[in-house]
Amino acid sequence: MTDSPVKKPAHARNAVIVVALFCMLLMTTLFLYQGGFNRWESTSELLCCLTLLAAITFLALRCKQTEEALCRVQAQLAHVTRVTSLGELAASIAHEVNQPLAAITSSAQACRNWLTREEPDLIEVHQSLERIIASANRASEITRRVRALSHKCDPLRRDESLNDIVSEALSLVRCELAQHQISPEIELAVFDDLVSADRVQLQQVIINLIINACQAMDAVYASQRTLLIRTWVKDNEAVLEVTDQGPGIPVDVLPQLFTPFFTTKENGLGMGLSICRSIIDFHEGRIWATRANGQGSSFLFALPIRVANDPGYAAAI
Ligand code: ADP
Image (cartoon, rainbow, N blue to C red; front, side):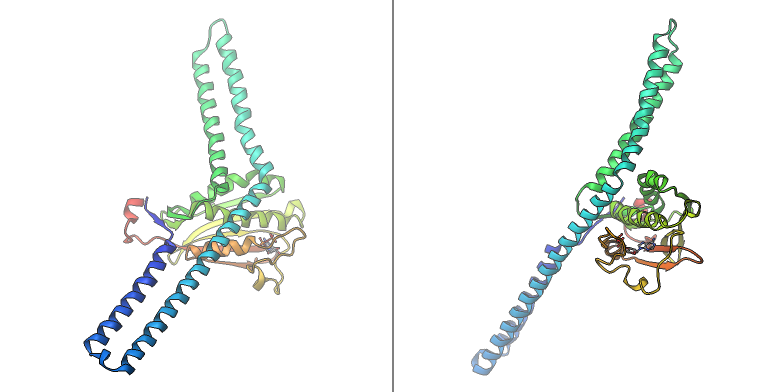
């Protein structure tokens, strides 16, 4: 696996300072070389240029600072919405963890029964213990995923399989789908291509699209609620599509969907899709929505797939 950490802001700041110092040095050297110090006009021109350069550098650094502050606020907001969506999924996650715990209890009871027999059946005991271990691993895996989503950490992109990320996100929303009486159809195309992605951030996008689809389909009869989740690769991009059978998106709403604070929901914040867009932008991808044929809507994103001759690609597969 190769890590491609986010470009550190300090590097960009240092680059601005280095370029400015280099320009100043070059100007002063030229000035001295041409003997400009003998003429007052040249000296004052040099001073003007140096002052101008210093002012431009100062403004560039201020711009950089503002950009960094904006990035920090966006990251905090992304974290808050992630935690909010976890809150929405709380009942679902509790149910998801409860299943392996219940399985552990019944396997442990079975194990005890096999042991307390006159002639303990060690093969059955062994099998019960295996089931307990598998269920405990399942429970801790769910907890690990929830913790990863709730953690606040800097984005870290690695070579990942989009299908694996989709499957992991689906495991967190399975009960949510069941609660909304939605039967998902999952069509993940088989492909080996990897995308350079922050796993947690992409899961946030996918979970957000699925929750939105669930909420949209609350408005239609349970029998009509189908959710189609598909992935495929086309033109060097890995694409994910989430299609619902909800009421669809009115034409006048379509251009505003990804605008911050745009919401048509009574208790909506209107930040979900806007954060999805900034996450996909960060991944150098595209995200868009369409009105599905007939009823409903589709949300899609496309991410560039890693090119085989990229440094580190071979190590990642
Ligand atoms: P919120 O869910 O808080 O409203 P979002 O940014 O996630 O914020 O969504 C913005 C708006 O986009 C929603 O209020 C809704 O009008 C529209 N929208 C999002 N997903 C869908 C969907 N699957 N079907 C129809 N409209 C949708």
